[in-house]
Amino acid sequence: MSALLNLTPAPALPRAVVDAKLVSLLKTGAIGLGVLLSGFVIREPAPYELYMVGLIAIWALFNLKISRRIAPLLTLLILFNVGGVVSMSQLAQLGTIPLYIAVSLFLALTSVFFAAIVESEDALLGTIFTAWVLAAVATACLGILGYFGAFPGASMFTKFGRAAGAFQDPNVFGPFLTLPAVYLLYLILTARPLLATVAVPALLVIAGGVFFSFSRGAWGLLAVTSMLTVLVVFLNARTGKERLRVTMIAILAAAGLALALLLALQIPAVADLFSERARLVQDYDGARLGRFARFGIGFLWATEHPLGIGPLQFGQILGEDTHNIWLKALLDYSWLGFACYLTLILWTLTAGFRILFRPRPWQPYLICVYIVFVGHVALGTVIDTDHWRHFYLLLGLLWGMIALEQKHMAQRWRGTLQPLGASR
Image (cartoon, rainbow, N blue to C red; front, top):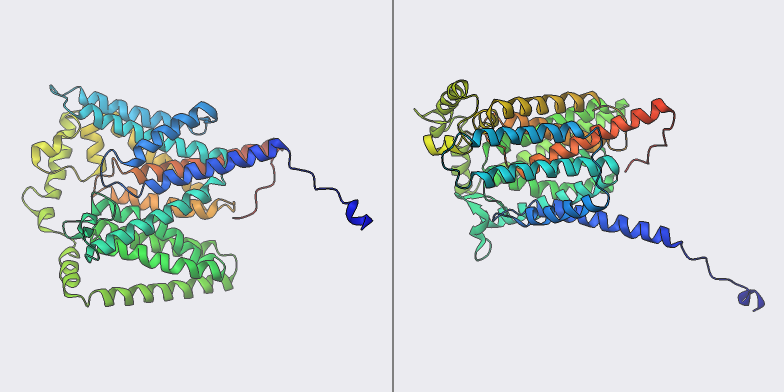
């Protein structure tokens, strides 16, 4: 009894520690919610835009720092939008064009924001990826249920008879799902059995969303990025046993997806639309003024109009938009915008590849983001990715991790390098 009476309560945590944990929890929740909202863009302005405007403003008041490592990203994106203003000056009537350029600038700022927060706190990468996976599973479920008309009003989650989820366009919905799919595939190839098993059903749902979007670009993007992921993980494996494991899992995953595809094609409506969409060249691609012919016309115009022809004018003149990000940059953002965009893409690809195989706590995230970013750059040759929110998120994440590596190397050379955190 005397021993019990002599017991003293454990000392309480210092107030500073409690406050720091609370701030960390708030930051994690705020970032996670922002990424989660990026998967729901049925109307514009979407909740994502409204939320991110407030979040960036609040973060800027307290702790948002744009380092010299992120400054090139900010500079090139601002100059890209200055090119849009130059192109806009060619129009006699502006209409809604200033709003279009304002949205472009806002999306550029979101890219810089995500780059800055990743550089300052790499632990947020886990939050961002988890939120993106949750958003992808949710919007993929809506797209699949909408495609099959599973409940009254489900058609709002389809467009042109194709799954669109909580997006306005199936051709944006499908590519949005790619990074979560690649990340889950990476976990299946490398993670512990329990986590890999949990990732399997989520990957199947997301892959189903991509399939029922009937977007040729999304199909190709998922197929190519998945193969690149397997290749990079195989090359990055340290032992023959790990390489054998990666090979076997990849074969099983491919067989499972092939079986799921065969089962889906047993539905006549699905088989008919699949056979129609699976053609490499559609009628509207190879027609007299189809997509490919418009490419030629557009690039000819670009040589004659170094200041551009004005944002959104190409589609009004020829009836269809550019469906090519390089042509879009030339005509809507002038030669200045095109030069800045080309410089930004080449800089990002080069800097990202140089650090791709360096063992770091953030390497799994870097591999997934880089592969999907490369796929989006290639996809941009046949579709306009200008206002894709998740493309700017990819760009920001990649620059954030490039900045992390630069900071790590600078600390190493100064001899002040702190131990890298445990692999997440």
